[in-house]
Amino acid sequence: MASVVHASPLDYPTAVGRMRGDLTAMLDVPHEAGIVTSAGGEVMRAAMSAGGDGRLASCVVASIVGSRPVLIEVQALVGETSYGTPRRLANNVDPARLAMILAVLERRVGMHLGTQDVYASVAGGLRVNEPAADLGIALAIASSFRNIPLAPEAAAYGELGLSGELRQVNAANRRDAEARKLGYTTLYTPQNAPDIARAIALALER
View (cartoon, rainbow, N blue to C red):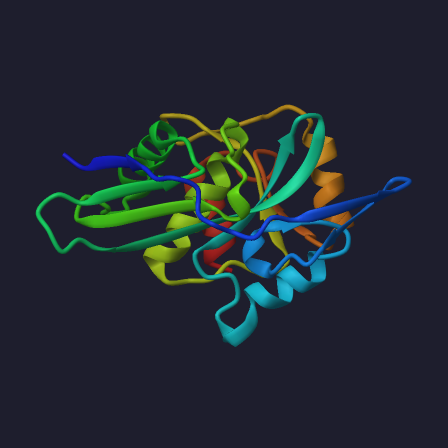
């Protein structure tokens, strides 16, 4: 049986914000910080697609933090285990949800992850517990497993059910608006993908 390890937050730089009216600017935030704002959306997309790999093993998630829509970067790494028991390490991600997502990917999509180490992380030290991040985590894992990048202008959100269906989440309109405002024009959501198999096909088989 695979073990699930909940890691301590990574030591990413802290974002410094300045509020001017309704415009939030993030200062001195490297692309690894993983929080997308109106000042940094284009920088993040360029950094994540540098080197010709597009957005390999990384997915931007339209999340809700408190009462505000925020775009965050979810990263994943999948590799063949060197030991008998594969590791599952969750950093700033609910380890129980990670285990569920992996089970659904294996059972409903046919990804053979039983012999793979899987690492999932939310960059920037921001912990994400909401089920709406399920789809972004799943797409990042699928991208790493298949070694196929996501489009640099893509973002995702949606709750994953045990039968592989994608469920509607709250504040969908606000998530859409925030993503599009920051230049993420391709959205993978329950509105255009009824299940995880369809979402992966849209994202990786374009």
